[in-house]
Structure formats: C-alpha cells, structure tokens
Length: 355
Image (tube, rainbow, N blue to C red):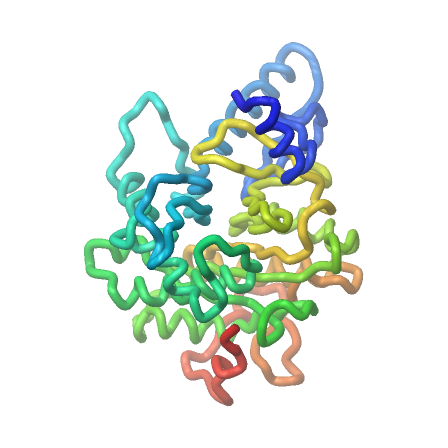
C-alpha cells in the first residue's frame, strides 16, 4: 500500500486518476479486444461479472518492465534504475498464477533482463539510441525512443541465432518529417514497408512479423481534441499495441480506452487500473501496431485508410501505396496492397537525419 506521500506524488505526476474499473457501462477496448459491460439483473449481472473477470485477467497478463532498480550500471554511468518498454507475449496468452511459467514466457522475459547480456535490456537500448540523444537519466521524446528500438531490433537481427529466430520481427517507423517532431500527418508507404520486410527476411518469400511504430505530435501543450476520436478508434484495431506517452517526467503505457479515458499500466504484471483523460496526455506520443503476417498487414492498411477518411480532416496518419504523386491512397481491398518485390525510385532512408 502506497503511503500518503507516495500517493500524492503519483497524483501530481500522473494526475488524480481513478483506480479500479470505471462504474461506466460503456465498452472497454484493450489492445484490440472489446469487453462489453452492461447493467442489469440476474443473468446479465453474472455475464457482466464474467466479462470483468476476463478483462482483469487480460490486463494483468500484459508484461511491462518499468521503474526497477538494483541492476548493473548503464555504460560508464552510475545509474542502476530506469524504465523499460514492454513486449507483448501474444494477444491470446493469459498469465495463470496456478500454473508454472512456460519456457517461452521465461525466454521472452530473459530478453529484457537488466544486463547487457539481454538483447533488449535498458543498457542495450541506450547504446543503440546514442545517435538519437538517448542517455541514462535523461527524458527523450517518443520519436527518439522509436528510432532507438528500430536500431536495436536491427542489431539483434544481425546477431540472432537459429535458437531465437521465433522472437525476431521487422521494425518500421512511420514518420512524416526528418526528426519526427514537426507535426503533420505521417504517411505509411506500403512500398517502404514491403522493402523493410524484404530486407529483414533477406529475400525469403515469407512475410515476417512487423512492428509498426508511429511517433506523433498532436498539439502544443496538450492533445488537440480533434484527434481524440481517432486515438480511441486505434484501440479497436486487432493489431493495436497501445500508446507510448504520458507527461513530461512520467512515462505511461496506454493499453486501453473506455469512453474518452485511457487505461494505463505502471508496474510489472500490474493488477491496479488507472484511468487518465486522453486530453491530459502530452501531445508527443507514439502508436504501436503489430502485424503477424501479410494478410494481417493488409487488414491493418484497410482499417487505417478508413480511419483517416473518417477523421474530418485531422488524420493521425495516412496510407499510400507508393511515393508517386498520383498514388495517394489504397482501395479497401486486400489485393490493392500487393506490391512488387522490386522497389524503384530513390532510396528514402537518406531522408532520415540523426538527432
């Protein structure tokens, strides 16, 4: 139980957010899964109880590594505690306290251990992100974090052996400017994503899993209300991995929404829910999406295109087939996202500048 001083500190950093499940009967979206809660009597109340129990198990199964301490110093500094990003263990997986942890679960946790020997440790993340301004003890924007994860994933792919190939995935950053901090709607170019996947799979025909990260700037001091409906809608995507955001000095991983409030996690396998108004988030944030295969990516593109079309002129990001000027969108058919394995035109990697 947190002391009064700690609770006041939490409220000051994160806001006086409610804990527990909201009394509202509106549906809850948690990383692409909908939990419908309704008021009623007898059988309806029993159904609601089962829905809430399923939601709690889903929420508490999410893996988040944050604010740990006592690990090896980072680089040549004396820092021994900091926050790590999360890694999802598959959408249908649920943590069961009554059963021993399976080997795959433990192997994934090992990847995020607090040592340089662990592929995705905070130590290796900072080393990979030095070119983007990452340093132990500093706060950086979502764009720099996304680029650092991209570099770290690429490095891990180069060093991965056959034993751990099942944990590898391509990483693609969707950004509309050189530094990702100038605002404007980023453009997801299907040709660029295809190229990323081809390079990652080293010419193999099988489409690899891909993590799409979309750093955004959605306002000046706070999120512009025009973007709130679209932010909420992203949680209905089955590919959703939530939002990396928060406030200056306080990182938050947003995993779900209910009405206009988001649900965040703030500890390892946390069972306590906190609600934060979406408009209170810092406007600099990042969306995450995971596409397991080509059909999943095609479905994501269709959903994202429709979302942009329904945004009343304020899209979070847009989708295009290529960088050709007359090719500004895709039709809502999976066949329209098929691209040639040969990418023509100029290289677009040079457009990105190191911070």
